[in-house]
Image 1 (cartoon, rainbow, N blue to C red):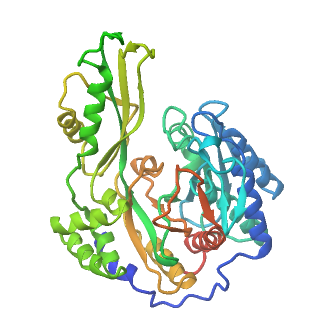
Image 2: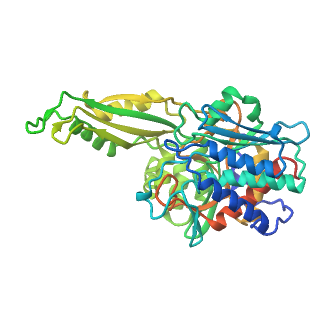
Length: 467
């Protein structure tokens, strides 16, 4: 079967009746356990730049030890003392290689003055859990640990080892990235047949569940530094050759530039699936976009920022610096331009395109940091079947849809190392109010607990329960 020939299966309700799971909510004691772990992790300040992930790893390890996990099955360590990872193994039997359950414990920085509340307090309000990391990615980290403890308490006997890895520095990568460090130094701890990770979630619109997205590929990241240097001078003697003006003009041109719209194997499947879900005029545009119509792609890209980012490589200015004194002409002006690149677009292609946008020899362009990318994951029938059946059981009529996530995750390192990775969570969020990395990040209370049930059942289905 071709990689995406299973689309028809994915977008229709399951024809195979699973045994009823019952309520979408976990039992109350399991909800309380997940809540308490979630709160503990969110309130640890593990910002990528200013925080540490080691306290998160140690807190999760303490929970596991208290639940009866042996010291020999728990590993805490990493590239430097402040950036530890946690790896825990729940042993199974049988011939199958392990399944790896991945989540990262670092978070994007959050300033109190930017939020309407303390970003590092776990606050429940109006049906939501608020706090930095509530959505990205401490919800999944908390659920993996809570569910692992539940499996042990219930005496679940998987047919493969279940390995949970909570890792450092996904948000910025760099020398302390936990997945890269583990692959290089402790590959045996996390080696697996496949992995489940962030990168796929449930889409909602106007309070209605639209789809449960299964991420099988992702964009990759390039950070470019745009820099202008100048001799400067006294601000009372201004000249046109001003470093800030050169940079500002180049960034203005970037704001008006768009990379070409196109689809690939994964996004064609996604838009075809969405054309069977959406209603109104966009329905036909989605189908035509999946068929390759440039005009339809333009309409789809204008409909939502997410669809625009799915259809093209994007580059955006994210940080800026410049000047050294209020009364001096600037000697330096620089910006970081963050690009989220389609898998089929090369680094050279993106760099050459940006050189053309800059159109000014005064603005120098260099790549900051490493650039990594991985292949798409194969469409495993067991993963597709389990996700689709379980989704339709918990939320009847909601289809599972394959996606290429617009951002990037640590899954790219696993895929490049030969471990197929699938982004799936079962946390449903309003697609027009995604607050990852932003102000007042939040996760729906119901969404969190339903995701807890979904991931509990999914891992069981993939490691020993009847398929």
